Image 1 (cartoon, rainbow, N blue to C red):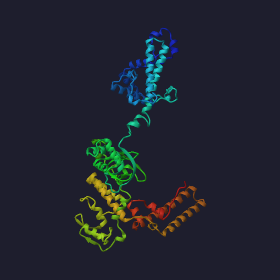
Image 2 (cartoon, rainbow, N blue to C red):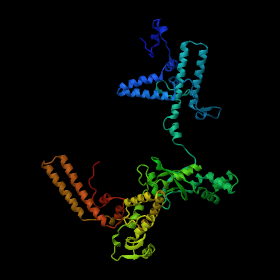
Image 3 (cartoon, rainbow, N blue to C red):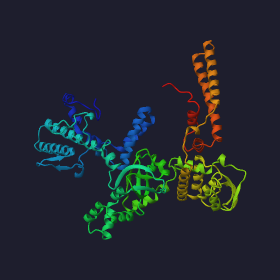
Amino acid sequence: GLNKGALISESDYRNLPEEYEELIEVGMGGDALKKMLDEIDLDQLIEQLSEEAEGAKGQREKKLLKRLKMLEGMQAAGIKPSSLCLTVLPVIPPDLRPMVALSGGRFATSDLNDLYRRIINRNNRLKKLVDLNAPEVIRRNEMRMLQESVDALIDNAAARGGRAVSATGGRRRLKSISDMLKGKQGRFRQNLLGKRVDYSGRSVIVVGPKLKIHQCGLPKQMALELFKPFVISWLIRNEFAHNIRSAARLIEAGETAVWDALDAVIEGKYVLLNRAPSLHRLSIQSFQPVLVEGKAIQLHPLVCAGFNADFDGDQMAVHLPLSKEAQAEARELMSAAHNLLKPADGSPVLHISQDIVLGNYYLTYNKPQAQTDDIKSFSSVYEAELAYDKGAIQLQTPIKIFTKGEVRQTTLGRVFFNEILPEDFPYDDNVQTKKQLKKVLAQIFNKYGAEETAVIADRIKGQAFRFATTAAVSTGKDDYIHFEEISEFIAEGDAKAALISEQFDEGLITEEERYNLTVGAWRNIDNKITEFLQKQLADMDTSISMMVNSGARGDISNVKLASAIVGIQVDA
């Protein structure tokens, strides 16, 4: 017997007994589907599927729940099942399917226009055939062709089954609406998620040691191009030019008034700096531009971590927010001075490293040569500074001094370091290593907030650069650790390795045990050498010891490589 919704071939239908004709209704194509969808009662179907889903398991349950979700969504939105069949076709705006006139009276047109034209032609032809009461076979064929042309408009891919529609007389497949939306060159990824904008530029970045944390160095030529409309407006307003054309001529000639205009218009403005890849919110931050000579963008050394930038040829893009609202957002929300914490874990993002660490370490460490029993006393920082300038004391010489409300035994370097911290911040008498500096900044942030932290970080950076320059740290072969004991360590390792080989030759241990014991013996020697070097390094006062002990650059493994042994290596 035949059930409702069953498929039947045309030949089988013709072979059915005559009495069936009055009992069954048969249809084909979109009309038949639309009629069946019209007869669906959503409430009843949802109830039926819910009951089935309760007793189902595994893949069947997943499928039923998927259907239920869709049907409940349609029910909530008041969508009839028959609305899934297209009876009218939306036509997309002309701007998205342009037609361009070429020389010689010809036109270049978007593929969508061709696909729409095919639908219109076939639809009109079908209308005529229906009006003329043409034979069923011809009408059905025309309906099929109309359906194919609608399918081609929406998704013209041969992979869908069927044949892809090609351009007239060519082998090129026509681009459908799906092709315009999908992929990297599609509407979403190309035009909506990322846009090409005016008032932007890009250049190589270099360090700007004199910048404040909310500033960036912008090359003059780049700034002039970015702010050109504002400069033209200023020149006309201040009567240096009468119209846009004469203002543009002044800019081209590089007149003095142009640079005055540029200085005036960039005041208080913020620009956005972006370094690709933009993996998190700190990849785009705003800065106040400071005009600089040259063609490179200058970046504050402390904000590099947020951008994951370094100065080995990295490039950054500059964008200019135009409206007042955009400028306000850039200033209040995106400024580097307001983004001092990592969004991931809330730790300070300020990148205290290398020269900044070294300068502060040099200022505050215990220099063996500066130690003395004759501890001088000073009534003020000014007095101690005079003694330092005259060469009476060094930065690391122990002194007694009245500072922050009491007399302390400390060093002038540590006094200098504490002078740049907030007045009511507790006196920090520690050696300023990388770890300690991060701790100090975290305490300042918790106590005083982002704005004060940005100011203090700038002071720490400025002072560190000054004293790192004074320290003139550079390395030579004499800075590395030379020690006689190295030959003893190596001899001990050789003896252990020889004993293990002997045991293997006598058959007391397997090949695998020999290998593991030999590696273990040399690893033990490696650890002994590392411990020995660490003790030596702690008591030394060389450029290498300063770099390693401060955390500015390198570690004990680098010293071990240069001063002692490479250690165990794996054959590649």
